[in-house]
Amino acid sequence: MARIVVIGAGLGAMAAAARLAVAGHRVTVYERAATYGGAVGRHERDGFAFDTGPGLLHLPAVYRDLFVKTGKEPLEECVTLTQVDPASRHVFADGTRVDLPNASRAGTVAALDAALGSGAGERWGDFLVRAREAWDHTRRPLLEEPLPADPAPLAREPYPALKAGLLRRPTTTLAQVGARELRDPRLAALLDAYAWSYGFDPATAPASAAVLPYMEQTFGSWYVAGGLRALADAVFERCRQRRVEFVFDTAVAEVLEKDGRAVGVRLAGGESVEADHVVSGAPVPALHPGGDAPRHQGVGTSRVTVCLALRGPREADAVHRTVVHAAGGRPTVTVLRPDEPALRPDDDHESVTVTATVRTAPEQDWEAFADRMAEAAGSAVPELRERLLWRHVRTPEDVRRDTGSAEVPGPALAGAEGRLLPADNRSPLPGLWFAGGWSQPGGGLAHAGMSGALVAGFIVEGAEFRGSR
Image (cartoon, rainbow, N blue to C red; front, side, top):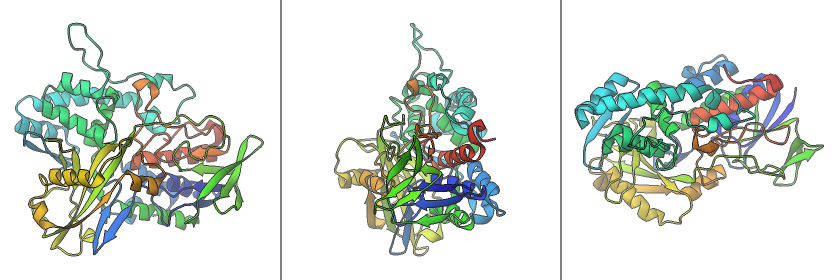
């Protein structure tokens, strides 16, 4: 039985902790905050509650596998999962609206044809066929396997872009895919919105980012009853059932090294804790002791979240998720309106969350930016201004406080000369491992869960571990 210290109580770190505890190891989690969940947070006030991190779950099979491998109760006995249908409503700059069904290729094609004109759905469907080819080439190496010792093959673009122009110039970015292959500014905006939702600028994101809409439209979008925070609650409880020890309000100041190997941690209060392995869920390269920092993904974006407390009931034909595309100086925003009694004081009120991706570098007047976000959200919520009781704005600095970094990591993407590959789960220092959104396979709820599985696999199975099956 090994002694294992886990730094941080985010979803990826807890996923690793639960698996390691089931394997018979003694696991202690040190979390600098007062609670668990990392980016999967909650804001509560006056009977209203809001998810302050992800609002929907994609690839729920990752957490089904976690619960199967760590206990008798499957995921569906611990949380209630519901497919969101329609998966999303899109409001384009010209006022056109379209509702896209959940995990239905034929339904999506029909909806786009009806809203955008004959042929629009076919172009989108043809694009998804090419996106599937990129997905098939990268799914295992980018999602289920450790990063290879030589990541050069993953630095090459896997998306089979259509050649365009007299000079047959190659397509290198997602924005070029939209312009050359979709040939409708609204379809291009639809594609761009998927990139922005994961933190990628479509003007610089590789064409391989086509896998993001493919993944969502193929495997669906799911809501966890009680909000996504309920998933963090369930994973935390599973850890406790497996006798994982949690120590909150306790920061780790340093990873201890001896004879070229991690041997424990030093807490901020000065206490040293010995360990056979250290699993860090902290942002890479934080806490890496000396030497060159591990390679890590840098997307340069964060999120602003506006929590809106509204008087008046949610209208009967409201949808769970609306993407309002940029127009007139307003940013693209995602408006989440779950029909969820647990998130509102009563049926005469509603909790609405509005999010936008922003660049981390420039200083901004976030309240003014939130004004523009709320104005955009008015296209999704009738009479929003008149119904507003109060709002709460969460900025990149709040993200930094909760997670250790203002930047929000994106999922691993091939191409882009390898710039969008996250850190290896194996630290350059033996005995130190990385789990969570900053390590393979990158950011997002499902990806964080997979990173925990990869780290546990390495520690339990050793060097022969080749990935999840």
